[in-house]
Length: 252
Image (tube, rainbow, N blue to C red):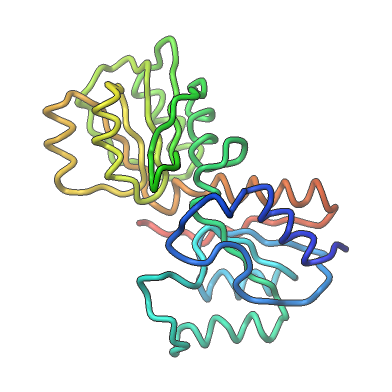
């Protein structure tokens, strides 16, 4: 068993949440029991995730996409009520880590994507949001584009949307997990061979074609599985609690 607040304070500090302006609250979103034996991680809040976490015996749920967002209603309507009832009934704590988890230089979504796609991590900032680098850059002596696609699809369990507009041997790549389509212009400005993100935007097709850069869209949900799993493992290692990642598939 571990103390709930010790785990939350560790996550807040380790991810340096105070450095980031985000779209919603960072860290604690719903207070559950004081002692934690098992932590469940997931990408996005949903009734399915909370129900599965309760069935798995979770005391705490850590997610990348939390319950509260600045551009969404804060009212407790029918959908939110159902979700919160599960947290109430099982006394589970909920905490969310969005941009700090994208950006982290050890367990962040983008750093892990760079490395597991086969690239060496570059220190040059990439994916700038509010003056902070959220994405990550990678370099290699030369990776086949088809090999990069195959690695990412196998790693993330996704069928990527690929536009082969650039060199078939890739030496430089930029990664912004999730909804990072705007980063294409930054990738073009930096002269990269490949840009990888989750979601696409219509205007990206012709921009990439005319710039001669490859595009991989790995889908929002699937491109953001790695960081939250790594955070769960970090908590397990430090506090000796159980950890289980629950995958609630989303095709978007």
